[in-house]
Amino acid sequence: MTFDEYRRKRDFRRTTEPKGFEGEGSGIFVVQEHHASHLHYDFRLALNGVLKSWAVPKGVPIETKIKRLAVETEDHPIEYAHFEGDIPEGEYGAGKVIIWDSGEFELIERDVDRIVVSLRGRKLNGRYALVRFGGKERKAKNWLLMKL
Ligand code: MN
Image 1 (tube, rainbow, N blue to C red):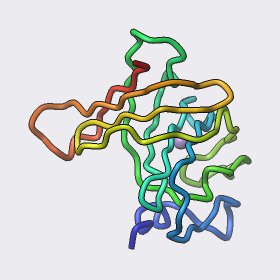
Image 2 (tube, rainbow, N blue to C red):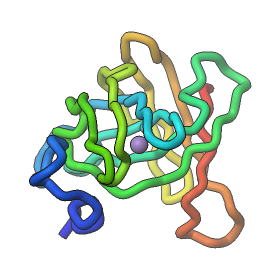
Image 3 (spheres, rainbow, N blue to C red):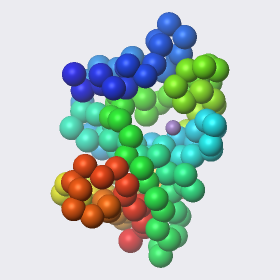
Image 4 (tube, rainbow, N blue to C red):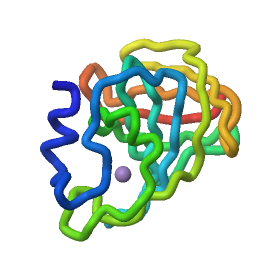
């Protein structure tokens, strides 16, 4: 199942995060400010019925020529794009989640190691690229996120 890892990490009797179903929703993106043990920003793109997700410790750049580390995390359910709230103490990712930006995107390019999108958000606008790095290892979780 698509969300096995997502569900395994969470106790839905305790957290108000969505349990998730597999559905449509391509074309939306969200950036969630996540006050977990370390503040980070979760960048999520709805692709093929799931939210592809990356944790971006320093946040999504607003300007070009800035490259930010984006660590791929497990696919999230589409409705997670609307989630804001407090994940309880002791739960995975405990802390406050706030929607920092959201909007629509157009998929320009998608390869196993490279994704280019055009974002139309309230804060983020224009073309962004995600480029996987970490050598020949195709499963490498580390990507660079930059505005083109
Ligand atoms: Mn997070």
